[in-house]
Amino acid sequence: MMDFFSPDFLFRNAVTGGWIVCVMCALLGVYVALRRMVLLGVALPQAGAAGIALVFLLTHHGGDEETSAHALALGGSLVATFATLGVLVLGGRTGRRTPVEWRIGAVLAAASAATLFCVALNPTGDLEMTSLLRGELLAISNRDLLLLAIVAALVLALFAAFRRELLLVSFDAEFARTIGRNPARYDALLYLLLGVGISVGVMTAGPMVVFGFLVLPALAALRVTSHLGATFAVAAAIATLSSLGGFEIAYRADLPAGPVYVLLAAAIWLLVSLGALARRRLATAALVVLALVTLPSCGLLRTPDERAAEPAPAGSLPDLAGRAIAIQPFRNDTGQSLRLQSANPLDELGHALGRPADAPVTVLDVLQAHAARELARRGYHVAQGDSPPVNLLGTLSVFSRKADDPLHVRLELALVDAASGTVLWRGEARKPVPVPGALTLAEVAQDAAPAIFAEAFAAR
Image (tube, rainbow, N blue to C red; front, side, top):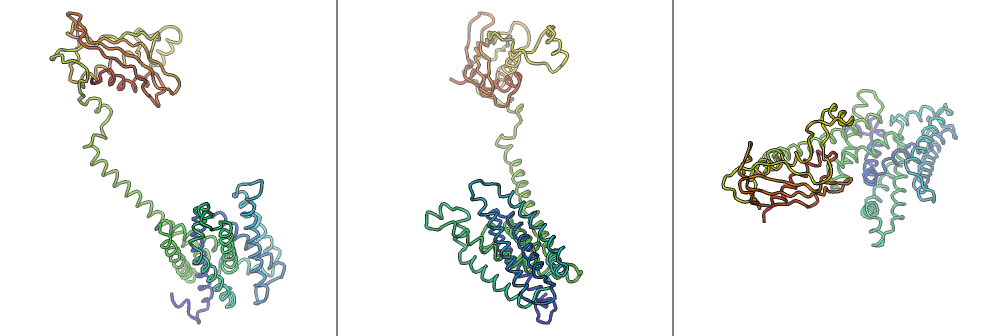
């Protein structure tokens, strides 16, 4: 590959010029990506190409001699690029602001059409302009290469000299202003250097290569590292690999170099992105495995039924010395039916027609069932049958909820000796109960029941 830079190699200028453009654009692209100006990088190279095509049309440049037309074309690229910058950047500071995406779309469409229009009207310059648009990189003279090297060195030197100020203005303009750094001045410097670099790059390698390397190496580098110095180094390395490796492939396969450069950079970005995704997936999988191993011992992965079956303290309930408890039907003093909607649509149809089911399920049934589970958790035996030693009686006097408000409830409970009628214990739940996400009355009852009985059976 080092033979590519040999003075005897026919395409030495193409290799060297393409490499300089790719590395310069990759380093500038880090700022473009960090400042989220990728869309700006779409329009500027195309505008520069339109300026070159217009100059070729006006000068009837045919590409067969090194004349002042090349210098004029570079001037056309500069003028078109900075005019586009003025439209896109300064246009957003007018009184009636429009989204920058609108302006970028309009400029991109106009510049693309203008480029093709000028090429169609200029038969003598069609070959050179078409080669530039295709990114063939074969018509770089010694003078163009020297100019490119000088401009790239100046642009990158200024970026290096003012890197701290440019980064500060990019991330915190207000803080930069408080320490005496004028954000407008450094924004102007940034746009100036971008405009010059893009203009010269388009004149040398074409808009496709410039845009591709303004974006792809920087995005790949930001996937690999978060340290700014390392990001610049990785971006330059990717640009070098893409340009030199791309020329090797294009030279061997007789393909236009520019598209191969960009496709190779895109392949590197894709591989780096997939690698980053794989690392995140592996890290996530490791955390999941760790959670599956450790959380069961903490009791955080138990199902609601398993948690409902766990032992609980007796709280304020008395010691009944092994006597069984029978849960009697709770009394409804709310003035509402508290009927739960049936899962059988025929039952609901009959209810709507005035033929309700014989024994509709209500909120009271849900509360009674939950009372049985809560007593069992506290070590009490819930009896089935007649004449149990102890009865649990309940009276529900409040059970209402409006919209997304908490449930307002009042449930009074009592344990009564069946033989003597003596009240052995009293408990009450009356605090509002949050039931977020509950939509139906059945869901409200199911969600609120644990909190209701936790309060009613609370320790004293």
